[in-house]
Image 1 (cartoon, rainbow, N blue to C red):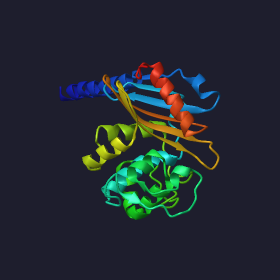
Image 2 (image 1 turned 180 degrees about the vertical axis):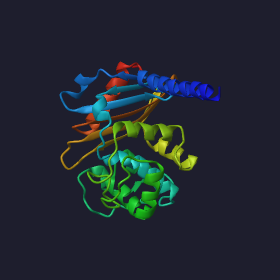
Image 3 (image 1 turned 90 degrees about the vertical axis):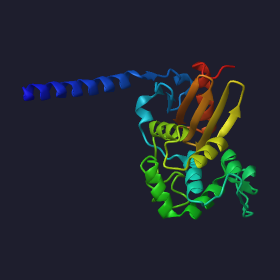
Image 4 (image 1 turned 90 degrees about the horizontal axis):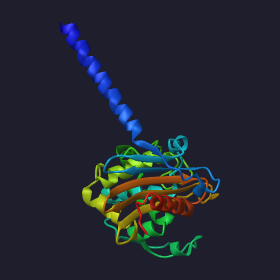
Amino acid sequence: MKIKTLCFILVLLVTGSMGTIQASANEVKELDIGESFDGAEGTMVLQNLKNDKVYIYNKQRSKVRYTPESTFKVANALIGLQTKAVSDEYEVKRWDGVIREFEDWNRDHTLASAMRHSVIWYYQAMARDIGAENMQKYVNLINFGNRDISGGIDQFWLDSSIKISAREQVQFIENLVEEKLPIDKQHMRTVKRIMINEEADSYVLHGKTGTRLSDMGLGWYVGYIETDKGKWAFATNMDGSGSKAKTITLDALKELDIINE
């Protein structure tokens, strides 16, 4: 009798697990946005954080890890605040006088303005202040991609050792939005605030672009959008620029009526 009961419970557990797996699989829908990429290879993952429905263009590529480039500024800002390498979003780092390729980089910056203008030197300086030990600790804790910072404390995210997939980026963003990361809530709220790209009557868009500057051959746009109906996390990468990835993302959000014009 005991054996029969155990077998029955086992069947329930197995079939229940299979049902969960099947339900999860059914929640993934294909995004029909191939034309937006203009022939370039790319992927987009979009997740409704209210009901966990996931929309994906190019499922195979969505699982492939790429260097995050400047999208790592989101994680870098969180770690910098948590380790007190920077006190708040207003802390200024002085420009060193070196003329760099973008005019906006050639001045003093705060954590917030350096996020907005994607100022690499600011975040490199902050990474050095964080230090390799603390950086590795928190990259592990937030489970960022392959967690490999061996490429150098101020270089590992720039066409170097750390890599992450679009699906993993969305998971990271979901944890940030829902404040489930092992980071103080006030710091997560600060970073979400400095990620704001657009504020409209019907939505607030938080995001960060990233471009592999060595050859402009990899572009990212990662973030989330808040609407009256809920929140959506997204990650787009492609063989191109971050600005193009952002355009594709916005087009998809409009196509799905998440953004209403």
